[in-house]
Image 1 (tube, rainbow, N blue to C red):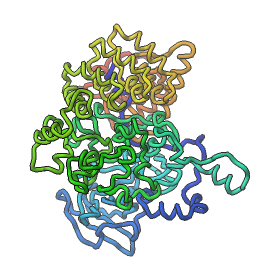
Image 2: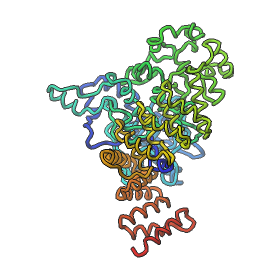
Image 3: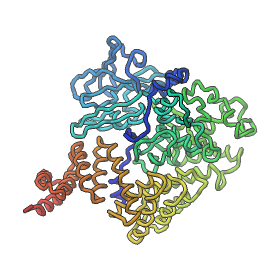
Image 4: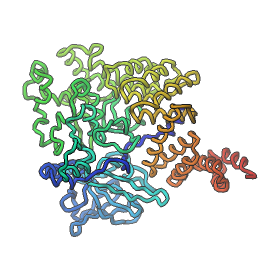
Length: 637
């Protein structure tokens, strides 16, 4: 059953599409007519400049006509009358000149985007290191996407939803072309204030009106931070249409450490804390400042219209006022055991060390926790003490911390971090001895919900242990939506528990969070449930319609379309399965897809088409025997 679920729901870390029935958006220009000073500040700051048209003002790289060699490939970088070009041979094997249409990034790194004839907007390999003033290959940052015969960063597809506002892919699966469009470059006003066309109309007419736009600081801490998390989290987009103030879990599901493949550059440290950049919200949601202190992103990043950290005096490493507002007396030598005004007396140097890896930089860990040198020894997770005292060992740091603050007793922050790292590292290796500590982590309300959900995700591989099913059953009714979602998606009952699982998942179809409802529908489909009676049947149909919306977001992704085809096929909806399989096959001529498409369209009466597809599966192909059997069954039809 777990194999089926992995096919039915494949993580798609980026993507949000417009909804025709959504509230109307006005665009940044309309906001500027009344809020000129605020817009001026925003226009000069980072959020407005994530993606910009390539102009003499926006381009920061050296396009003076020089040639650079990156990964053994030459690139010529030229500027002609304010238009910028990159000539390369990588894509086709022959020199091709591309006009730079857009820049991506403006603070540390800048990438250069061009539009190909088929509408693909790609990131050209040369990227500019603004601080070091040198070129580097953007593959140095992360793994590229496959696009045709070469690997390239495909912006329309996998960099989708955060760099511009109100983006629509507009991918034509028949022509294999994009006509991607968006409302505003960068992150505009309405990404944080919500759709504002009605606000503009009300203010223009000067008629009495109720509050008609959103102020982030007036939201509850969870909804407040969700506004930032729409971009600053590693997440799968389940349902399109998030707007500021909505529940994150009606649209997104965090992609956690348990769900990551083995990678030389993982997104998380073994203890579940974030390791890669652009995931600050998932780090912050693990912090006691958020969980207990109800802090939000805006407590520190106070000016949302200009988020430049270097301009914010209260975020200087030596500043402690934000922290001591709650933790009075902590920024003293008595607590830090370091001289006043030294690096060791800085709150952020100890509790927010630079252990998150960004683009050619290290940024601060937003989980805001204590140093855990034990995990450096055991799991190579860096700690604040040895980040500074590089000439000392982690064992020295443990001894020093024990001397100053006492040993890491059970229940302490250090003890919890060690337990998590040991448990998750063992579970990643499939060690069954981790079942007991994983169960303990899930049940421990003192742990951050994201890390409890990570433990639950790991438990799915040990489904033959009856305690595991009981934990999943319990988690489906837990108060935290991330736990309920992981429970729905990863529940993997043995035959004896199947009926109970169906009952619990049917109940989850009525969950308040849309992602839980969709997860329950996926799980029920994986269990072979095509229909339910009464109200449960209505809820199942409604939840399945959410999957239909998800599939439409990803028509440019072969794996996503294959997953959609399997979902609709197992749901008994061949009419929807056929175009999904057809789209997948067009993007990736795979024999498994070919066979499944043939089976579906044969049932729809398209026998000749099915027969032709099956005949294309040759001897030696893994699907050959199944194809021959189906061909035989079609004889005489």
